[in-house]
Image (tube, rainbow over all chains, first blue to last red; front, side):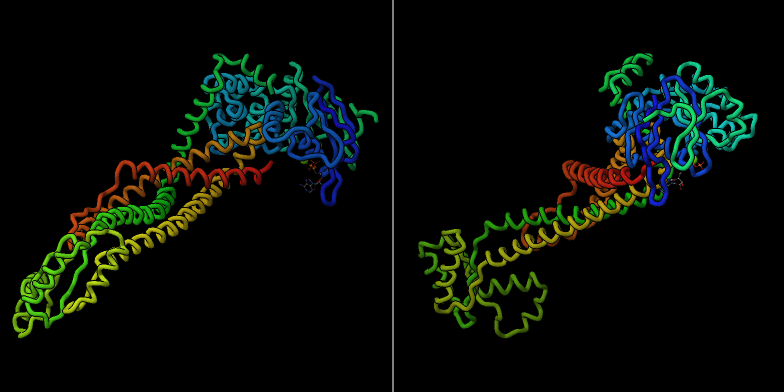
Amino acid sequence: MIQLEQVSKRYANKTALDHANLHIPRGAMAFLTGHSGAGKSTLLKLIMLMERPSNGRVIIDQQDLSKLNGNQIALHRRKVGLVFQNHQLLEDYSVHDNIALPLKVSGYNNLDAGRRVRAALDKVGLLSKEKQLPRVLSTGEQQRIGIARAIVNKPRLILADEPTGNLDPKLSAEIMQLFEQFNQVGVTVLIASHDLSLIERLPHPKIHLHQGHLSGAFIGSN
Amino acid sequence: MTTDKATSQAQRSRPETLGKRLLREHAEVALSSWIRLWRTPITNLLTWLTLAIALALPGTLIIMLNQAQGLANQLHTSNQISVFLSLQTSSEQAQAVAQQLQQRTDIKQVTFIAADTAMQEFSLASGLGDILQSLTDNPIPATILVEPQLKSADAIGLLAEQLRQQASVDQVLIDQLWLQRLQAMVHTSQRATWVLATMLALGVLLVMGNTMRMQMESRREEILVIKLVGGTDAYLRRPFLYSAIWAGLMAGSLAAIIMTLALTLLQPSLTDLASSFNSTWQLHNLTIWHWLVTLFGSCGLACLSALLTVQSQLRQIQP
Ligand SMILES: Nc1ncnc2c1ncn2[C@@H]1O[C@H](COP(=O)(O)OP(=O)(O)OP(=O)(O)O)[C@@H](O)[C@H]1O
Ligand SMILES: [Mg+2]
């Protein structure tokens, strides 16, 4: 599902990735760890086409991302659900409208979108909050709304960047359980996190990023 | 892309044709951007007024000058030459000259105005009757109005030159000359107006572009999130284009109203001015055609500037 071939990403005075190889199979759930500034977000950004690699190829679902341009970038992003650390909900949109956004951009009508939004809200257990504004919700609830937005389009791949960064251990564990539920129905999940105490208790493969080099599970050999 | 479409179609309740879907999406965006306009009514109203004035100023001038050109062209049929005889000429001599001119084959018609008649007409028209009465000598000469046979400027000029050589002729005036000057003046004013209109249209583009830039800046977050969940540029452009269309329509309507008011105010004095040229010319107000041109022009300018700005802003705002 996710394939990195000799991928390097250099910023002006920092090399975030250095000839990295990685192959995460379809249906897997993995954690991406590393100290702050190691380049975890950078790797996710390459998958979302928010950044382009300096070298190498990123292949998602058999699609070489370097070949995508213009509208193809938008279509690629629709296939990937992204969960942010700081949830990135729009303040003047209701919970419903926030979650409906990925559906509206691909042309869903209000009826179908509403149905799907409620299904997603149901999955994260916040069906009663549909009409509210995000700012009246707790941090944990906001994070779950962010997750509902990421899964509403039924993507085959979910990326999460520090999804538990602002949460207490109990809430963090709940969020991780949500991701495990999605993974159980076949969705590939990659979670970047440095919350080691939480990750170590979970039975999923870990990929470690240190000074631009990957180690641990799913490391492709070259 | 095709698989993506196919799966999402299959999961929907009613399949929609592409045309229907686009129509629905456009209607939704048109409505929501109309509602959004009224979130900041004062700011928007001020922008529309600014645009409206920039459009109404050249618009009013163009409508007025186009009609003035009509007037000048209508007067063009006058080829008359006014021949003023010298003051020493007696009444009999003057009439003799008039009769002699009537014989010429290159003259169609001759109208003789005796010195006394001219004096009477003038004192009536000028209201200076008493003062003129007190003069011992009549200061106004006998006048012969000559209608030439040929209408070309050359022929008229030649005839005028010959008349000028005649004994007892003091001065010869060709009506066409001042007409030509009037036409040249109208023409120059029209050109100046188009230059002005171009500059103001540029101003409209800039004001509109700046408004769009500010709108997009205030919705930066939204644009970023929409990009990340897979919104295409066309999708992102749509609300801003509709807001430009609405702004164009509002500014255009306001401009048409301002122009109507301006022309209504100018109408009486311009009609008076025209009647002093013996013309029944009347300034007409805005027609439905003028309204349409103003609305479409305003909308077109707004859309053009929105397209240019939005495209460059969308390229700049990247997640
Ligand atoms: N646009 C950029 N320009 C220059 N340097 C950048 C840019 N983006 C990231 N970096 C640098 O690349 C390195 C990796 O950043 P990244 O955000 O991927 O780290 P991270 O592992 O996600 O860290 P954290 O755990 O704190 O989120 C950092 O040193 C950062 O300063
Ligand atoms: Mg990060």
